[in-house]
Image 1 (cartoon, one colour):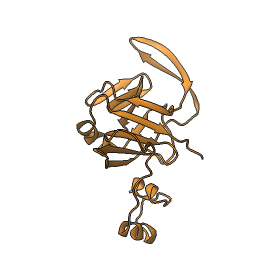
Image 2: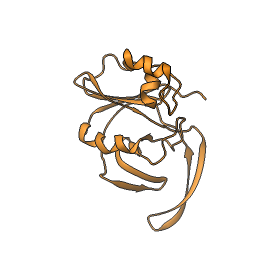
Image 3: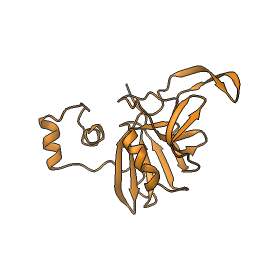
Image 4: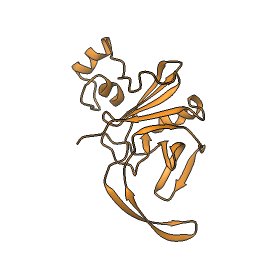
Length: 170
């Protein structure tokens, strides 16, 4: 519901009120971020916090997301058998990428657990998370609701373009 509301210019809520009902009668398509992009691609709109998977030029999956919070972080974690400190900027970089490696099920990274991650920029991935708030909250990955992360790997192949655009404003 949140993704639908965002695409239709409605402030996301957990209820379907009159404005959302009206939008359901004549829904808007998501804004195309890369008009001349490949027919099969992923577009991540950081401004609206949504992801659109296009297959053969049609929007096949639209999802709410939560991207990098843009807050500097320092985390201490046991990684590869040693206690280590990891610091960085929790940012989802804009640009043009391609899907690379993936993991089925839960993947433990030094910054947390990722469900069915599909990596597209080094260690940055689209992945399921138990918490996908309305505002950006990740270390840089693009969090997806668990039910979306369950089906996305079957819809999204390797080497598919991923276009990340925009900037979230609080």
